[in-house]
Image (cartoon, rainbow, N blue to C red; front, side):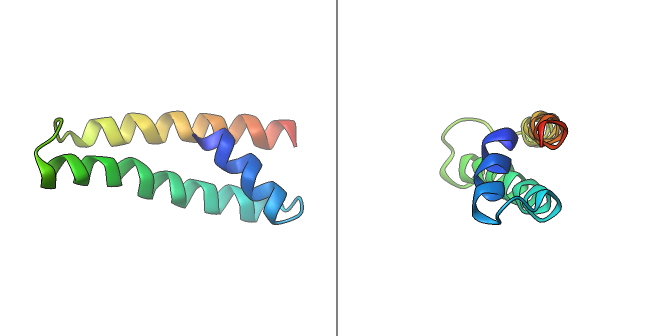
Length: 70
């Protein structure tokens, strides 16, 4: 998720990797924790904060790889 968001925001911000990285990190937080809040509110699935943390670790690795590539 992080690498895809990073590539999308680099395309939108015309190769400004710092702005794209920051925005993709913030969007990853919103999406990761948003799924957990959806599970909590609707009682579909299970609510676990560690799932959001693990998703953010993966997104951070993806963003870091994209930063190295750019």
